Amino acid sequence: MGSEVVKSGNRKRTAGIIGAVVGLAAAGVAAGVAAERYVVRRSKNADDPYADEEFGVWDSDEQLTVTSDDGIDLYVEVVDGPPGDEGPTLVFVHGFCLDMGTFHFQRRHLQGKHRMVFYDQPGHGRSGRLTKGEYTLDSLGAGLRAVLQATTPTGPVVLVGHSMGGMTIMALAEQVPELFESRVAAAVLISTSAGKLDQVNFGFPDIVARFRRPLLPVVGFAGPISSAVIDRARRASTDLAWLLTRRYGFGTARPSPALVSYVEKMNSTTSTEVIARYLRTLYTHARLLVLGPLRTVPVLLVCGDKDLLTPLTHTYEITSVLPEAELVVVADGGHVVMLEHADEVNDAMDTFLTKVLE
Image (cartoon, rainbow, N blue to C red):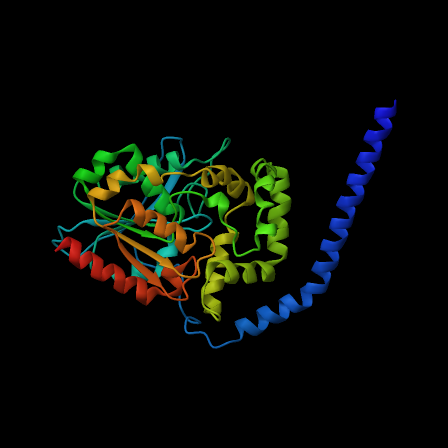
């Protein structure tokens, strides 16, 4: 009986704590809404070099669906190279909460110079989703292999991966190392990591950042009902989403508002349920010690010096295992550096490809 009273008291105390937190959060939200909207309006009214850019609009020579080993239909687009081209096919692999549009400027810049393949990763863009279970980097590596088999069954390839796309390439290297000896001509890894993502503090003080790990199981097991509620909340607070995208995607003080909106749109179309089903594999990703196959090919590493999601220190860790890799650090570059500083990234890729493919 006594223990029951204690439990009841504990429940009341917990409810009180939760109520206080919710109350403070609600007060903070109410106080911040006006300021949030003011900042967004002011930012979006700034001069914008990409105000008239048609993001996500390109030409493709072939559109197809490739089914992965776990039954997910992957949406794929192929862009032909110049007539008579016998060079390698460039295969682009995008990152978490994004889609093939991540490589908007690279696609436009390289069109007509190389044959290119783009696809949406499982649960992203126009690709299908898992009906149950979690997404894994192993399955993403197998998905990349299926795309290669369907679009480029023979001949050399250059693999280009951003963030989770770079991790997908690492998973493929672990699964099929012989592919890197026979067909992979080079690899470009942009803003990525070989592990320790659970230690990233996202620019927060350590005392705040250390709370992220206890929250992982809660988010990781979010069901479809709670995910739907969260998705509605995300849509209702588009201004906040825009500000968070600018904060965590970009390194410059005043990035293009149209570019921020483009990235935020890609983020917002990735459902909370999909995000939750990816978290465990991203947090437990650890492939630093199995990057051996990448030593057999030329590698270009690109990272912004203000990337808060896959910090530059993670790229330096990769260079410790791949000392021959070329490294390009982009000043004032955030996580979507290939969009934010497209000219610098395109120049680096041009120089690298000209050297390794001559």
